Image (tube, rainbow, N blue to C red; front, side, top):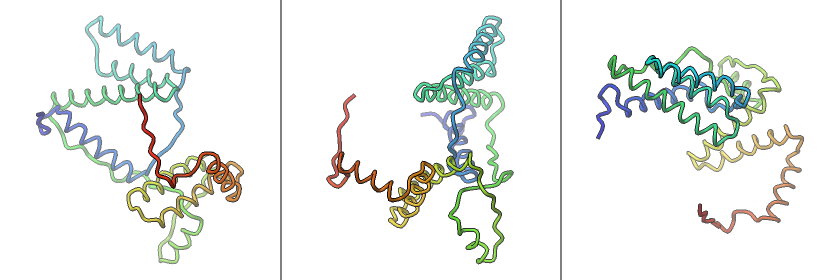
Length: 217
């Protein structure tokens, strides 16, 4: 079994990555952005691959060449499964680079950033006045239309996660509030949303019977 304390061990690197992710989640919460990738990066991916091949043939290959190739190959993908595969490969190369760095220089304690940014999240409309009534000064801003949908989707993950962890049915009301806000973005009132839910339930049923479908690949 690999000793995680040995410089260059996979376990040590993965622990550091997990620690960094936890710190990022504490600072920024769940983030949901557009991919921004696609065929427009194909030419740059091909150029990165060419440079990687040439560096290999000259005996000058570096981790920078390999990671750059993987990175641009990921950017050139737009289909979710292919993009995910390339991102995993990119992450794997980054991990191998860190392992190589640790073997050469000795493992270091990863410095976790706890500051340097502001934590923001979408909150209910009356939260600022509740905070103010508690004797604190809330710092707020109004989300612009372009980011509002993304913030709501992030809020959806947050509320669903809170219910999943706690099992508290009170969390479902928060989840429903977010769903209504998302529905409003699509021009749907709560009544219209309920009509669609009811129609789909009539057509396909609900989850009352606890039916579990076995899927065979």
